[in-house]
Image (cartoon, rainbow, N blue to C red):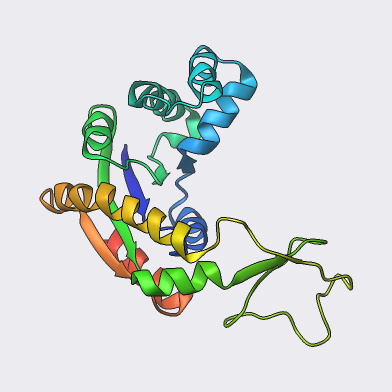
Length: 209
């Protein structure tokens, strides 16, 4: 079994590329956030333990996350490997992950910070139907939203200060992690500031190496 790690800053387009990687490789997408919520809902032993930390407003320890991953990769659909989305975030997490599954490729979608700020701060949605728009790339048409009742909605954290803070935290965490994987010869940088299809092509090409 050999797995893929996909990471990139918020707003880099990981969601779109994760779907395409899953379609192309057949590997299931594994998000630790989704696993945590599922474990809590199902009241598994690990989920019950994690819930105590979450309700106390504390970060769930790496040991619990690794237990969730260990359980996840035992499922039938993960026999050929999985695609980790947003995990690991730190070197200790990567070291722990290496103890339970092999990672063959690490894909980093890279986009300049100023472009990330533009992408996130310019986005908004229709509060009525949920359709997503952007001031520059995909503005709502003059005729309004297709639902016929456009109500502009913006996330409170889609502002420059918050986005820059999130980017700083991302770079602090992932820069050492990128070097760690690069030293293993499995790290691939992909320019994410281009057409979506070109990004997908480069990712799939990297996965063949």
